[in-house]
Image 1 (cartoon, one colour):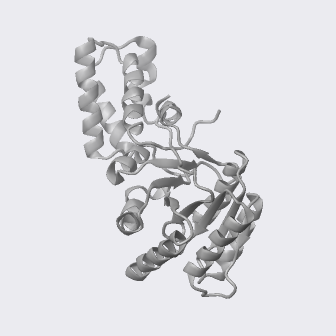
Image 2 (cartoon, rainbow, N blue to C red):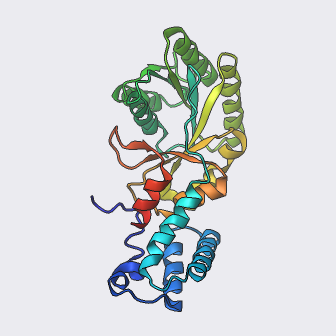
Image 3 (tube, rainbow, N blue to C red):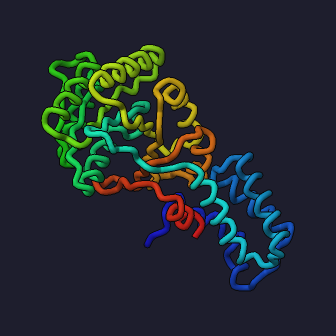
Length: 295
């Protein structure tokens, strides 16, 4: 398998490369190189320091002497941190209503199509609501991706229709026709942050007259790193977000961001997108991710 762009294997070659074969001892230089590698991979200073502190303590306690043993310890330390958050999607309601939120350009629309396709593998019937009603192109793009994902779609009857009414109609149809999952797309205009949050609150209120909201998933573009997180703060504060979807992990994303985004938001990553194909969205598994990250 080709090395993933966000994998840290390349970053850690200076630490674990030839040293593994030579069974070199752990030195002060080893710790310096490991710290540089963690910072380069976008873990951030606080998390890098915490991981290094844990590794130093474990090395002393277990009397580890060789660099090659550090790789497994690092992998375990990262997995342990990732696993503190539960990535389970809570979809037991019928229909299970999922709100998908995030700023424009992060990949919300394609994520919904891929998510519908992912759910179809579990024999779920999915309907999508196009509640980003102010951009006609967004509605058509969503219709294309919903079709690719095998989902039905409820579109606005005219451009600029009240998003809450589209959401209401989607849930109404989901209940009437026995759909398992209703996924509601939402607007992502940041210019009118207050208005947008009011709109999301209204969408939620209207939905909850018919069914509880099972999940509110915030889509983040992993390639934007910490900047993307700053943009998303309003959603985290006001939209009742229950989990994160990281898109574009096949791009220039740095793997450390995955851990830092969970720790900084206190929210679990539930889905990850690692390609442009319809099948390139998967559930998030800490063990698998830590293995891919460190090798």
